[in-house]
Image (cartoon, rainbow, N blue to C red):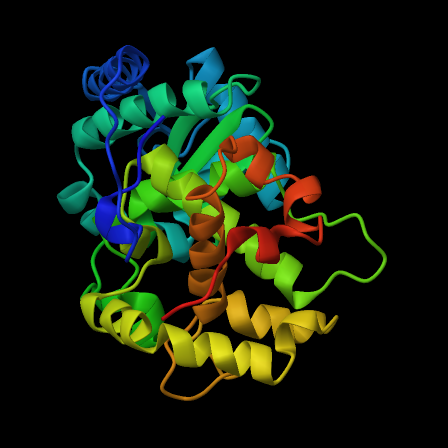
Length: 330
């Protein structure tokens, strides 16, 4: 399992006790990390290339993935006619030139996916890592899963300055870079396996924040990225939140927002937006996810929990996590 960076544990002092047990545990940790670095690449099926030919792929596995995609996306039953219609769609043809330029090779992506699969097996030993396919997706959702299949819409990662993205607002466009693929893949896998389901009659905003914080932690460990990368903030946004964490938390507590059962309020706090309207116009979007992860992180500094446990309703809807975390920004 990957460890969190000391800078993300903010303000805590660690003492290392030298003992045989500690040495053995450290050796196991190093072994896991080294294993992830040396993990075999994961082959990615280039369904984007195959479907752009306008016919049913001849490879059986590729054809199965294409058929599932067509059913899921409402393109109709897969045959040469519907495949040709798909390839001729303006929303598909629009990106083919840029796809050839940016994503002609997915070798690096396959290596990163291999490391993620290694981490996945350690974090979620009861889950099966899906078979990955790249596509050109005309939908807003860039990464999604269907049964044992993972679809990655590479046309959503062609660079913030890519001209066809011009109609997107800045806060969306800056996330459409190749560097965002792996955090987005990790998040799609986590949410697919562990959807938000508090299993209580009146879920609170705090429950949603804790769930989102657990998702952020899982993405960090699964993709091997920092808190900032998992949250998707730029340096300026992260610096602002670090500086104003206490004010944001006091706003949530002082106005009793975390105890609210308003689902719309919860969405305003955690959904992607130019700013977090429920707090202030200066607060970067998704500040609820930031606070949620800081609470989860504080909890993990006091107790040991597996990632799968953090993502369960027993954790985020349990009712005692906030006091048990000892969270309170200085």
